[in-house]
Amino acid sequence: MLRNKQIILGVSGSIAAYKAVDLASRLSQAKTNIKVVMTKAATAFVTPLSFSAISGHTTVTDLFSSGDITHINITAHADCIIIAPATANTIAKLANGIGDNALTSIVLAAKCPLFIAPAMNERMWLNKATQANVALLRGRGVLFIGPRIGALACGDTGIGRMAEPDEIINYLRDFFIRQNQLANKHIIITAGGTEEIIDSIRFIGNRSSGKMGYALAEAAKARGAEVTLIAPPSELTAPGVRLVNVRTAADMHQAVLEGFAEADAVIMSAAVSDYHVANTCSSKIKKNNKPLILRLEPNVDILEELGKSKESQVLIGFAAEADDLISNAQKKLVAKNLDFIIANDINQRAGGFASNNNQAVIISNNDIEPLPLMTKRELADIIIDRLSAIISNT
Ligand SMILES: Cc1cc2nc3c(=O)[nH]c(=O)nc-3n(C[C@H](O)[C@H](O)[C@H](O)COP(=O)(O)O)c2cc1C
Image 1 (spheres, rainbow, N blue to C red):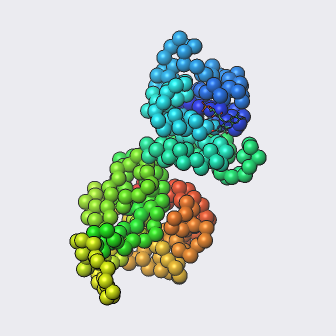
Image 2 (cartoon, protein in one colour):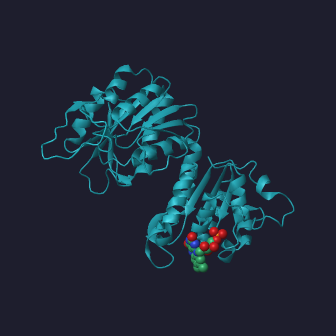
Image 3 (spheres, rainbow, N blue to C red):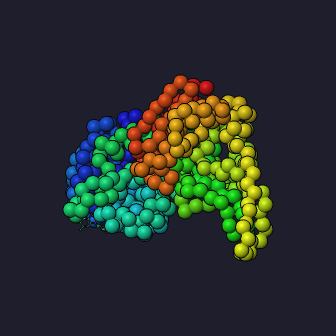
C-alpha cells in the first residue's frame, strides 16, 4: 500500500529525531517516494545529509535557498505529510497557522492528510497549551500517532515518547488501505450522555464522556465517510465532522430520525436517558422543606425504533452492563435488530465511562469477540473495520 506513495517526512527538533532516520529508511525500503523537510532545530540532532542519502532527494531545510517555490511545488502531488518527531513548538505553530519555516509553510500549503507523531517530555505534552493545540488540530482532522508511555530522553518515564517507526509505518499502511473504504457512505454516530430537564437550570444526566463516540467519528472520517456526530455540547473537539448538538433524549431521537433514511449506518454510542421528567418546571424550582417528587416517564427507545424501521442501514449499539454482560448484550442485539453490539462491563477498573481506554466484547448473531484493553481510538478502528466489512458485503 505504501509503494509509490509521495510522502513528505517532516522532522523537528527533538532528541527523537534519530528515529526519523530509521523511519525514512523503512519508508524508502517500502518503495515510497519520500522528501524530507527539517526544521533548523532538527539539524542540531541529525544531519540533512543522512536523509538526502536515504531518500535520494535533497533535504529541505530552508525555503529561500532552492530558487523555486518549494512549499507549493513539494505539496502538489503529496499523498500525506508525516511529522515525526513533532515538537511542542512545531505543534503550536501548526495549530495557529504559522508558516515561519519550510516545514510549517509546507503544511499550510498542503491539502493532503497530515499525521503527527509527537515526541517530548511528559510535562511539555501535558501542558495545557500543548493539549489545547492538539485538540485544535484533531478538530481539523489531523491524525496523531502516539505519543506513547515509556522511557523519555530526559530520564523520566511517562507519556511523550515518540511512536516507534514500525508503528508509524503500520499506521500509514492501514490508513492507505482504509482511506476510501467508506467513501460516499453517511454514518450517524451518537455520543455522550443525554440530559433530562428538571427545571430552567437543573437536569438529570449520566457520566458518559462522549470519548468513545468522538473516537468513532474520527475513525470513520479517516476512511472517507461523511459523518454526522450527534452529541450534547462538550469540551471534546469534533474531528472535522458535522456536529449536531442536542441535550435531551427527545432531541437526540429527532436528530437521528432526520438523517436515518439517508444513512448507511448508525452507531448509537450515546448513553441515552431511559426516562424524562414529566413535571418539568420552566423556571427555577424554589427550595422548601417539603419532599419534591419528580415523575419520570419512559423515553422512546431510539435503537429499538431504528431496528424496527431499518432497511439497508447497518445498526450498531452499545450495551453498558453491570452483570451478565454477554447474555444481556445478546438479548439487546436481538430485541433491537442490531447488526452487532459492543458490550462493556461498567465495573471494569481500567476502562469505562470517562477513561481513554475500553475493554469490550463485540457480539453479533454468529460471533462473540472479546477484545483486550485498548484505547477508545483503537477500539473505534476495530468497530469501523467490522462495519466496513458489513457494508462492503451488502
Ligand atoms: C537536547 C534537546 C532536546 C529537545 N527535545 C525536545 C523534544 O523531544 N520535544 C520538544 O518538543 N522539544 C524538544 N526540545 C526543544 C526544541 O528543540 C525547541 O523547542 C525548538 O525550538 C523546537 O524547534 P522546532 O519545532 O522548529 O523544531 C529539545 C531541546 C534540546 C536542547
